[in-house]
Amino acid sequence: MSQLPEQPSEGPVPTSADVARLAGVSRATVSYVLNNNSTVRISDPTRRRVREAAGELGYVPHAAARSLRAGHTRMVLLPTGDHPAGSLHPHFFHELESGLRSLDYTVVRHGSLGLDAAEAARAWAELRPVAVVAPGGIALTPQGIAVLRRSGAKAVITLGPQPVDGAHALVMDEREVGRCATTHLLERGRRRIGVVMPEERGVGVFAEPRLAGARRAAAGGGARIEPLPLRYEEESATALAARWRTLGLDAVFAYNDEYAMLLMRALQDAGIEVPAETAVIGAGDLMLGRLLRPRLSSVRMELATAQPLADLVDRLVQNPGSEPERHDLLSARAIPRESS
Figure (cartoon, rainbow, N blue to C red):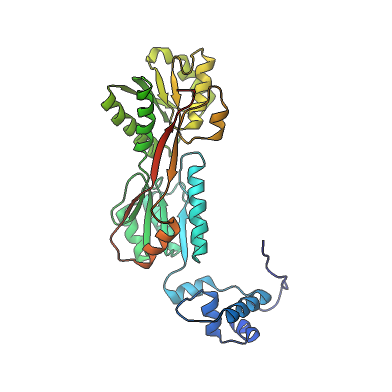
């Protein structure tokens, strides 16, 4: 890992003029190099000399001043929100951040939990981002999109189950997860299927579409769907398992692998055999689920676009007047194992 050179704790703050003198170039050249301006041709030796001088002096460009000159920042805002548990979303954001940094964007995570749509849009707009990728847990509205655009955002992109008018959309149709899980259970001959509905705050934006997908699949297969409220607590799972036989169910899609593991253990503790009496499938395909006995069937999900996500964001920023685009990200497939 590279480190900043040791600098005196006191003394004048280095300026671009200091860098220019040390490098033997103009201040304009310093600005072009350190702001990665590609419209002016500067030789590689000169670029190296400027960067070395900046490093030696400990000079860092003033982001606010640069933003004033350009009329916008190079900041892409990634607000935090509610996401399903598992590695899918962290991996998605890691890939997006890495790609954006390689394109010279500054990526900022914004703590947005607890903000409503209007509050969130105003808070994001205050930072003057050039782009915002808003998570599905925050219901961005056309009015909020207008606020962001007036503040200088060239691309407003939603990430969630449904597009929003006026914004580009990265759509994760969670109905496909429920459809995939239920279709798998139907193929195993199950016709009375429970669907776990987590009671934790913020999960409904993902759970409701998964339930809708399960119902759509069941309607075509002559099956019954029973929503099952469940908290992510042993006591809640134990209570559900205690009345399981009164529900008359022969299978359960447990929302994701964490809830599936919780419920499967409670069912086993209640003397209900998995999968002989009740088949169980989760979603997320966690490694831990493969270590259980019986091994947990799951829905494996992937997020992908036709081009790298960072390149997509950059293209949308470069074309701020373009018509809103929709890109479907989510693909899903059942991974059969012993629990179903």
